[in-house]
Image 1 (cartoon, one colour):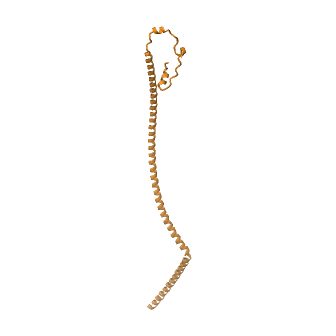
Image 2: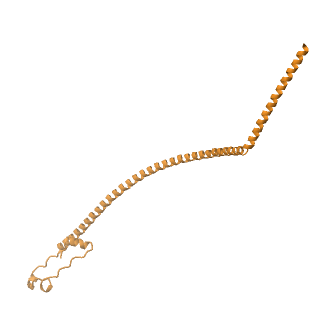
Image 3: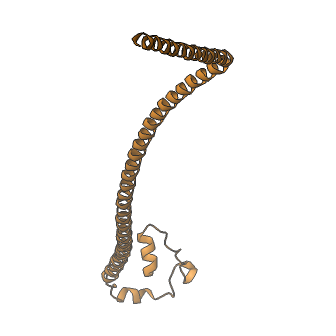
Length: 204
Protein backbone atom coordinates (compact mmCIF):
# COMPACT_ATOMS: atom_id res chain seq x y z
CA UNK A 1 0.00 0.00 0.00
CA UNK A 2 1.48 3.34 -1.05
CA UNK A 3 1.54 6.15 1.55
CA UNK A 4 0.34 9.66 0.93
CA UNK A 5 2.83 12.54 0.98
CA UNK A 6 1.73 13.62 4.45
CA UNK A 7 2.08 10.03 5.72
CA UNK A 8 5.55 9.73 4.19
CA UNK A 9 6.64 12.97 5.89
CA UNK A 10 5.26 11.65 9.18
CA UNK A 11 7.15 8.35 8.79
CA UNK A 12 10.36 10.17 7.73
CA UNK A 13 10.19 12.33 10.87
CA UNK A 14 9.89 9.26 13.07
CA UNK A 15 6.13 8.91 13.14
CA UNK A 16 4.03 5.73 12.80
CA UNK A 17 2.53 4.68 9.48
CA UNK A 18 -1.23 4.04 9.33
CA UNK A 19 -2.27 0.34 9.69
CA UNK A 20 -2.30 -1.79 6.55
CA UNK A 21 -5.81 -3.01 5.54
CA UNK A 22 -6.29 -6.86 5.66
CA UNK A 23 -5.83 -8.75 2.35
CA UNK A 24 -9.00 -9.70 0.41
CA UNK A 25 -9.71 -12.47 -2.02
CA UNK A 26 -10.33 -16.13 -1.34
CA UNK A 27 -9.80 -17.07 2.31
CA UNK A 28 -7.81 -13.97 2.88
CA UNK A 29 -5.01 -15.03 0.52
CA UNK A 30 -5.36 -12.13 -1.83
CA UNK A 31 -6.16 -14.38 -4.79
CA UNK A 32 -9.25 -13.15 -6.59
CA UNK A 33 -9.90 -16.28 -8.67
CA UNK A 34 -8.38 -19.62 -9.51
CA UNK A 35 -6.87 -20.05 -12.94
CA UNK A 36 -5.99 -23.17 -14.78
CA UNK A 37 -2.60 -24.66 -14.17
CA UNK A 38 -2.04 -24.95 -17.90
CA UNK A 39 -2.75 -21.30 -18.34
CA UNK A 40 -0.15 -20.52 -15.69
CA UNK A 41 2.34 -22.73 -17.38
CA UNK A 42 1.78 -21.14 -20.78
CA UNK A 43 1.73 -17.48 -19.57
CA UNK A 44 5.11 -15.73 -19.38
CA UNK A 45 6.42 -14.62 -16.01
CA UNK A 46 5.64 -11.02 -15.16
CA UNK A 47 8.50 -8.54 -15.34
CA UNK A 48 10.13 -7.54 -12.06
CA UNK A 49 8.63 -4.54 -10.37
CA UNK A 50 11.72 -2.39 -10.74
CA UNK A 51 9.83 0.70 -11.81
CA UNK A 52 7.50 0.37 -8.84
CA UNK A 53 10.44 0.16 -6.42
CA UNK A 54 12.11 3.15 -8.09
CA UNK A 55 8.86 5.07 -7.89
CA UNK A 56 8.66 4.34 -4.14
CA UNK A 57 12.24 5.50 -3.61
CA UNK A 58 11.46 8.70 -5.50
CA UNK A 59 8.44 9.28 -3.29
CA UNK A 60 10.57 8.80 -0.19
CA UNK A 61 13.12 11.28 -1.51
CA UNK A 62 10.33 13.72 -2.25
CA UNK A 63 9.11 13.38 1.35
CA UNK A 64 12.60 13.97 2.71
CA UNK A 65 13.05 17.00 0.46
CA UNK A 66 9.68 18.33 1.56
CA UNK A 67 10.69 17.83 5.15
CA UNK A 68 14.01 19.60 4.52
CA UNK A 69 12.17 22.45 2.78
CA UNK A 70 9.85 22.68 5.77
CA UNK A 71 12.83 22.77 8.12
CA UNK A 72 14.49 25.42 5.97
CA UNK A 73 11.33 27.52 6.04
CA UNK A 74 11.11 27.17 9.82
CA UNK A 75 14.80 28.04 10.12
CA UNK A 76 14.37 31.07 7.84
CA UNK A 77 11.39 32.15 9.91
CA UNK A 78 13.35 31.76 13.15
CA UNK A 79 16.32 33.62 11.65
CA UNK A 80 14.05 36.42 10.48
CA UNK A 81 12.42 36.67 13.89
CA UNK A 82 15.84 36.56 15.58
CA UNK A 83 17.09 39.30 13.26
CA UNK A 84 14.06 41.47 14.04
CA UNK A 85 14.48 40.85 17.76
CA UNK A 86 18.20 41.65 17.49
CA UNK A 87 17.44 44.92 15.68
CA UNK A 88 14.85 45.83 18.29
CA UNK A 89 17.25 44.92 21.09
CA UNK A 90 20.00 46.99 19.42
CA UNK A 91 17.62 49.93 19.07
CA UNK A 92 16.57 49.58 22.71
CA UNK A 93 20.24 49.36 23.74
CA UNK A 94 21.15 52.47 21.74
CA UNK A 95 18.18 54.32 23.19
CA UNK A 96 19.14 53.24 26.70
CA UNK A 97 22.76 54.31 26.12
CA UNK A 98 21.64 57.70 24.79
CA UNK A 99 19.32 58.20 27.74
CA UNK A 100 22.09 57.10 30.10
CA UNK A 101 24.48 59.56 28.44
CA UNK A 102 21.98 62.39 28.81
CA UNK A 103 21.28 61.37 32.40
CA UNK A 104 25.02 61.32 33.18
CA UNK A 105 25.40 64.77 31.65
CA UNK A 106 22.42 66.07 33.63
CA UNK A 107 23.68 64.46 36.84
CA UNK A 108 27.19 65.85 36.25
CA UNK A 109 25.78 69.34 35.71
CA UNK A 110 23.58 69.04 38.77
CA UNK A 111 26.56 67.79 40.80
CA UNK A 112 28.68 70.74 39.65
CA UNK A 113 25.90 73.14 40.61
CA UNK A 114 25.54 71.47 44.00
CA UNK A 115 29.29 71.63 44.59
CA UNK A 116 29.29 75.32 43.63
CA UNK A 117 26.32 75.96 45.91
CA UNK A 118 28.04 74.04 48.68
CA UNK A 119 31.22 76.09 48.26
CA UNK A 120 29.21 79.35 48.35
CA UNK A 121 27.29 78.16 51.39
CA UNK A 122 30.49 77.18 53.17
CA UNK A 123 31.96 80.61 52.35
CA UNK A 124 28.86 82.35 53.69
CA UNK A 125 28.94 80.13 56.76
CA UNK A 126 32.57 81.04 57.42
CA UNK A 127 31.74 84.73 56.98
CA UNK A 128 28.84 84.42 59.40
CA UNK A 129 31.10 82.62 61.88
CA UNK A 130 33.66 85.42 61.63
CA UNK A 131 30.96 88.06 62.03
CA UNK A 132 29.54 86.16 65.00
CA UNK A 133 32.97 85.95 66.58
CA UNK A 134 33.54 89.68 66.06
CA UNK A 135 30.06 90.50 67.36
CA UNK A 136 30.69 88.31 70.37
CA UNK A 137 33.93 90.16 71.13
CA UNK A 138 32.15 93.50 70.72
CA UNK A 139 29.34 92.31 72.97
CA UNK A 140 31.86 91.24 75.59
CA UNK A 141 33.48 94.71 75.41
CA UNK A 142 30.09 96.41 75.74
CA UNK A 143 29.16 94.16 78.64
CA UNK A 144 32.48 94.97 80.30
CA UNK A 145 31.89 98.70 79.81
CA UNK A 146 28.34 98.39 81.16
CA UNK A 147 29.68 96.46 84.10
CA UNK A 148 32.18 99.23 84.84
CA UNK A 149 29.43 101.85 84.50
CA UNK A 150 27.23 99.85 86.77
CA UNK A 151 29.98 99.58 89.35
CA UNK A 152 30.61 103.33 89.12
CA UNK A 153 26.91 104.04 89.47
CA UNK A 154 26.72 101.72 92.45
CA UNK A 155 29.64 103.58 94.04
CA UNK A 156 28.04 106.95 93.37
CA UNK A 157 24.73 105.81 94.80
CA UNK A 158 26.38 104.23 97.79
CA UNK A 159 28.52 107.27 98.67
CA UNK A 160 26.09 109.95 97.53
CA UNK A 161 25.26 111.16 101.02
CA UNK A 162 28.91 111.18 102.06
CA UNK A 163 29.93 113.07 98.94
CA UNK A 164 26.99 115.43 99.41
CA UNK A 165 28.11 116.25 102.94
CA UNK A 166 31.70 116.61 101.76
CA UNK A 167 30.61 118.96 98.96
CA UNK A 168 28.54 120.98 101.41
CA UNK A 169 31.55 121.19 103.73
CA UNK A 170 33.74 122.26 100.84
CA UNK A 171 31.28 124.97 99.84
CA UNK A 172 31.07 126.21 103.41
CA UNK A 173 34.85 126.30 103.72
CA UNK A 174 35.15 128.22 100.47
CA UNK A 175 32.57 130.73 101.60
CA UNK A 176 34.33 131.23 104.92
CA UNK A 177 37.66 131.60 103.20
CA UNK A 178 36.16 134.14 100.85
CA UNK A 179 34.70 136.06 103.76
CA UNK A 180 38.05 136.05 105.52
CA UNK A 181 39.79 137.22 102.42
CA UNK A 182 37.20 139.93 101.95
CA UNK A 183 37.75 141.13 105.56
CA UNK A 184 41.55 141.12 105.14
CA UNK A 185 41.29 143.24 102.02
CA UNK A 186 39.13 145.80 103.84
CA UNK A 187 41.56 146.02 106.76
CA UNK A 188 44.44 146.49 104.35
CA UNK A 189 42.61 149.32 102.62
CA UNK A 190 42.06 151.04 105.99
CA UNK A 191 45.72 150.67 106.90
CA UNK A 192 46.82 152.21 103.62
CA UNK A 193 44.42 155.13 104.01
CA UNK A 194 45.63 155.89 107.54
CA UNK A 195 49.27 155.79 106.42
CA UNK A 196 48.58 158.19 103.60
CA UNK A 197 46.91 160.60 105.97
CA UNK A 198 49.84 160.58 108.32
CA UNK A 199 52.26 161.14 105.52
CA UNK A 200 50.22 164.08 104.29
CA UNK A 201 50.16 165.71 107.74
CA UNK A 202 53.89 165.33 108.14
CA UNK A 203 54.65 167.00 104.87
CA UNK A 204 52.44 169.92 105.78
